[in-house]
Amino acid sequence: MESPIYMRPLAAKDFSLIATWLQDKEFLATYDYVPPNPMSLMEIVSLWMRYLNDKEVVVFALCEKSSDSLIGWLGFDEWDRHNKVATLFIGIGDRTMRGKGYGKQAVIELLRYGFNEMKLYRAQLLVLPFNLAGVKLYEGVGFVQEGVSRQMVLRDDRRYDLLHYGLLREEWEKREKDI
Image 1 (cartoon, helix red, strand yellow):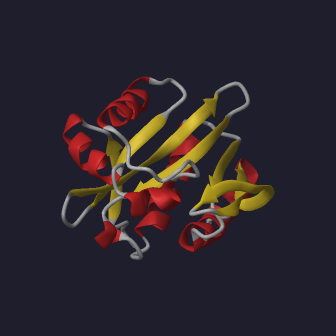
Image 2 (cartoon, rainbow, N blue to C red; image 1 turned 90 degrees about the vertical axis):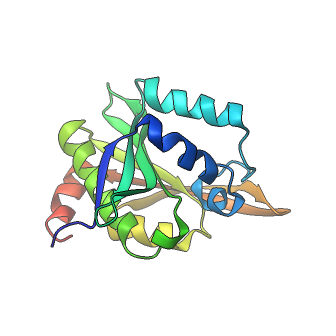
């Protein structure tokens, strides 16, 4: 089956749409564990420049094939080349594209890129436990929960754990055949 999505390098034309997503509190609530406050234009520009210039970051635009439209972005940051480890991130900013399995397809393609092109030994990520779709996706492609930072995140006057997941190259190679 052909993938309904594709990854491409970020382009200047993507900035304005991504900027709107980074100002969307609902999107930010599960995108990261930092407070989901809409980002200022300066914060967005700073993040954008990091995406484009930081040697520890590999980032792609996530696009739907049928419409050729930008629906999100994904990549790896905190890339430790010596240890061959990087932290995966993904955000589907277009609300109409969530729940269609695009995130899973995108993570699979990103992991292929990470393990084959970047020569990673380990991919890792952090996820909030109330991001049930994210937890299901990550476990579904083979990530293993390795730890918990207890009550690390404060949201709406309530404390939440932060879950740590990892996936090793040999685990991915065994799992990829079945995905």
